[in-house]
Image (cartoon, rainbow, N blue to C red):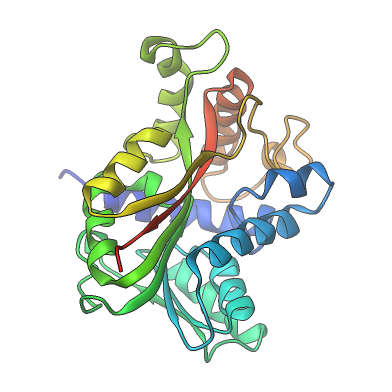
Length: 280
């Protein structure tokens, strides 16, 4: 029986979710490079990047944001807190959603940060939200898992109010140093895609073009680690302990660290951010 890519991603997080939670806590995405260079903690650097995105979106008290692929909820809860807004996080894995709800309650923000488990392909329509109903749609290193990224961007455009913004951060592939062609990049990016359940890692320009094709006006499209290797909070010395992690499917976690390290060291892996606004 064939399984869909989306189902594979959901099943991947059955074991990766607990591992990521144990190793990274509530905040799983890369942080602001300047904050990292100032020796802020991975959590504080991630929060700094989330603040940039919330500020760019213009989310305000009383507004409502949708955070796609919200994981264990750290960033969605933080965005609700700093914006004074309501944020709904969605994923297709109930274990992740349950951890996020628990965290929101612990932070005293369960009234403003809610977490829903949606169907594997609901990202293509976001059908639970009416046209023009949201003040922000965000994603943090989650759209990379989608086989039909363009469908998600079209759905985000539909559900946003006129003048509201899609803000995102995601993994990308890129030419770097000695590795300029797709043939040179593939030996590093291919294993990342295979081990971490990514159908295809996009480029900075591919994301921008898909957003533009959906009707968005692009206000920001930038590689967050220009001209440098993208290590973020996971340097090769493995201070977080990925290599020693013990748990379900631990070999997959170890393999993920190994192939990501290789892609980071080659420079062909990076992280980018976008701000795309629906015309007013």
